[in-house]
Amino acid sequence: MAFSWSAQATDNSAEPIISGYWHKVNSTIMQENRQFAVYLPRSYQQKPEKTYPVLYLLDGGVTRVRGITGMVESLGAEDLNQQIPEFIIVAIPNTNRSRDLTPTKTDLIFKGKVLDELKDNSGGADRFAHFIQQELIPHIDSTYRSNQQRGILGMSFGGLFVAHVLLTQPELFDQYLIADATFVWDDNYLNRTLTKNQNKLKDTQLSVFIGLANNAHLGELGMTNRQWGNEFIAGLNALNNPDLHIRSRYFPDEQHATVMFLAFYYGLIELFALQSK
Image 1 (tube, rainbow, N blue to C red):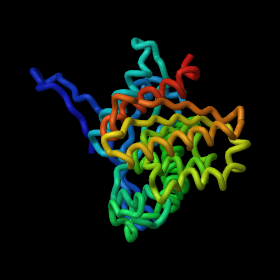
Image 2 (image 1 turned 90 degrees about the horizontal axis):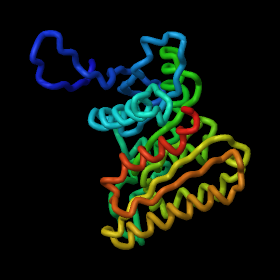
Image 3 (image 1 turned 135 degrees about the horizontal axis):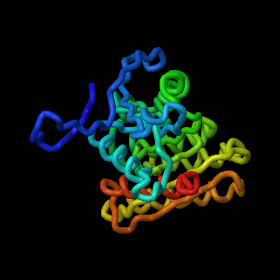
């Protein structure tokens, strides 16, 4: 099924504007049917010899897919100076968000206070990453003209998942875009894991962009999330790996709920602009 939008047609020749198409895979790893959407670049049909990098988008509901595919298509358009390459985009909507995107089985706790009871519905990030690696990526690479370069975009719990994959399976993607990740998860889980897994990143060749929002309205919780995010950025930079390219940006005028598009916009440009020239 295609999802599309268009102005009200004034004649029978009007064509819809297509953002992508839904597909399903029966996942043995997840033990459920998983839906995903695929967006193909505008030049895909006109240039049958060309191959494309792939972006994997988490929290891939219809609204987010429309926004991100429009952004990526615009930034990759020649009439807008082609600031980034063209991409195939694979969007993965949620069936159980907290289960799939969190790396450990625990409640969401801050300073001893339970903010969200998730102990029985969390900790499935490794299995979800295994599904992406073993089932989804091979399907995409065998079905579409991908060039084996892969990036992943995630926000909030999605950013937590992206950072977790970066620390545990850095070879899975070439580019990691993280928007205001839940750094307060499991009492600073990401920074603890970075300390333990430094050797996995010392010889890697990849690029990371991290966007942080101003969550001062959340009080100590918001300030701590930003502080631990800055510590994570500093920890990555401290690895002194010349092939590990770290970019970050703080958005003082954006809160957690509003930062995603700006973080992805600047992240895409900073990570991919040189490759499009």
